[in-house]
Length: 237
Image (cartoon, rainbow, N blue to C red):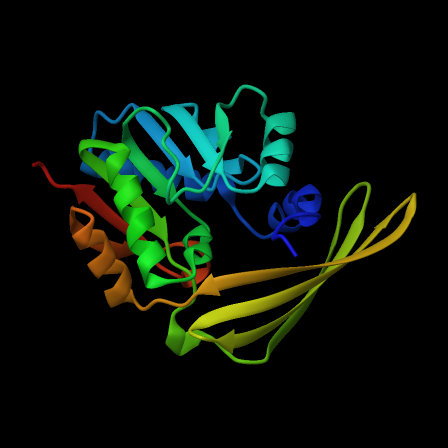
């Protein structure tokens, strides 16, 4: 089951009620300009439905990518002004370099393995100008992941009600999450499931991967859901 194969259409229904996007955009902008005051360009890896990139466009020239064609379809429909491209952020070549690269809301967890974490950070570095800023939101730490974790939430929108239930198991230092969705609209009731496999890395693993990719001055700031927002600068040379 491809992550976001069906849920891309209801992703914003869930997260617009859970996430203060304006706060996160202001925080990201402050973190970037605090390290590079003249930053003018930005790439978002794993752009999703475009909630962050569409707001960042106020201050930066922006480009985004995502591995999910369904997420990109939603993004393009809602934000046709954005330049967003299909591709894996660990290998994609956007054809230019930027003053900042961001990968937020725990999307980095989808690398699943340490080797692919290194590959992703190296690719982020290839897309940065000298002195450019990297910002990455971590996923759950191994010590905080709960085998058998269960949750359920219901959200109401103007045209739909969605209930999402999650069961997470821990296997091979990864979370294997089954997400079950029940969507109620005027047309009827629809049920679908998706699986999300995400790697569990501790802070030291993130920092080591960033340093190996050429980043320095790494700090861990408050981020999404308390998972840590890693910030660094690409070293010269």
